[in-house]
Image (tube, rainbow, N blue to C red; front, side, top):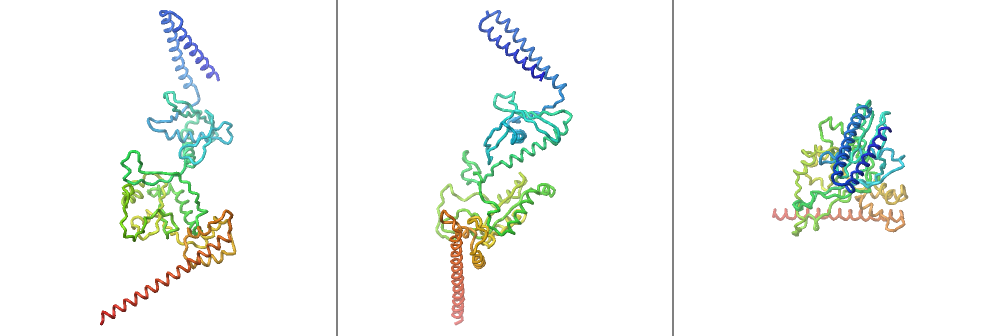
Length: 430
């Protein structure tokens, strides 16, 4: 407190001298004014020397150490400052009386932080203080954090404590970070400086593993694999492998998310004209393979690749081999267990008298989860489980009949084809 009061007195004296200098310039004769100005400037220089001397004396005898973390390191943002700002801002926000809220870029929620300039923290029963100050060497709004602690705890604070602060700060940032979905732009647009190689949107899918219509055993297997991968950073480092994992989802249309197909289908003979800005993508198989496990795969950690396809047999074996697509997951037609999940999601029912009949039909009929979900979707504002389940039963019976007619037609075609072959064989003999 005595040091603070001394600095207050020095500041007050300097302010008085500056006021005196301004008065001299306005009211006193030129020669006298010059003499007095020289006297005031000399006094100010003496105060500056006194200030520097006091700073050295304080640093010499003070038991506290000060470490500064600037907002910028050269021309680049200081990542340590960002992690510290997040950590310090989160200290005791539930108890602080002064809070400030901000919506940080790429954050999925409003961030509440303390509005105090000085914050106290405790680590292993040792107290430290964080102080946020404006940068004295910059005319902009740059700032820096100053960490103050007793010199007898130097090793603890500069080692374990700072590692703890950076780790926790980055963890909070990752938790609050909004996930984004990236898509590569057509290569024709890369020449424009306004175009980026990638476009992105906020990823806000409401789907969770709880709502996915899938066999429970297969779902549990996937969850366990993901959890094992997320906790396996040190194991992958021990093996000398990039920390990444690939998943291949395949099945009939209606079990994967599929892109928009061209009109006419793959058998269309009609020549389609494409606009200039919708030409074929320049993404190559070699480029994809290099991105998955080439030199690029060593850049960054904790990567998960997810590929989806309705035609696994058409994919290059080099793309889907283990090590690139580590886990192959078949998403087949809707099972009874998957139906029960959909019924719970859409109708909020766990059991019903019609479940038994639906289970029998699902064993006899192939229907995708997407088609089952569409029939379970209430067509009125008020949910009517009976009507929706009966609608599904009707759809399953229609699909069963349609499949039966299709099988009979294919059988007749095969029989007729056999008869024609025999007929032509006899003609050749005669």
